[in-house]
Image (cartoon, rainbow, N blue to C red; front, top):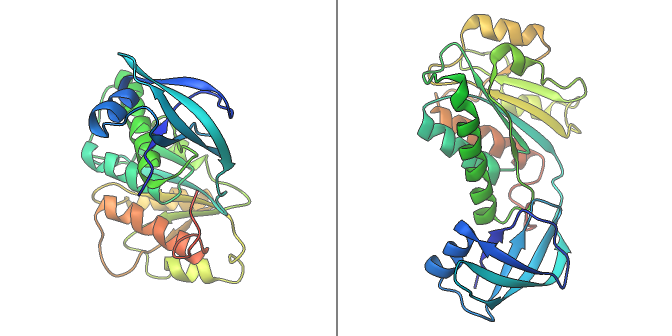
Length: 255
């Protein structure tokens, strides 16, 4: 039986009594129908996972006691996903999949072919919504650390996130000389643990954008012969990297 998990954004220690309120309380009370004495797991975005027991169910909240804690397995690699903003529902799916597949940071940006455009004042609302989706994905997949959803930036601003000591890749369907598997298996890259991945919008990148990325130190890489949907492409990139680096497909639990 899988023990339910909830997120409480506060410091926790064994012996603490705390209250789950709002959405978390509704989830425990209405969806799971949990009662006093039922066990659950709590995470707070740290490197720890906490065992807890429901003690009371007062109206408006649920009282929990933290009964123990254990360190969560650490990720062996560090991944930042820079995602050109697609249609809203696809961006939400990308954030869910990227969280499940271990992205530590997700940076949304506008490319020239990005379809959605909204006023700058709406950006904080989008970011709050996306961060909530990342938290829910962590709860579902058993992850304890929560990926940071960065503020929305321009293409030029996104290029500034490139890492001198990491592997900076921009995925382009017209690239014919370099594939993702070949890059990851290159002896010069085998020990690489830090990745910055740039995935385009519907319609892909314009040639001028690829040229700018190459000038900024990125490698242009193909995902293969098939043209993938934008939400599939991001998940495929992350899955390939996690598999090649041994974080996907073993019997250990991912962080």
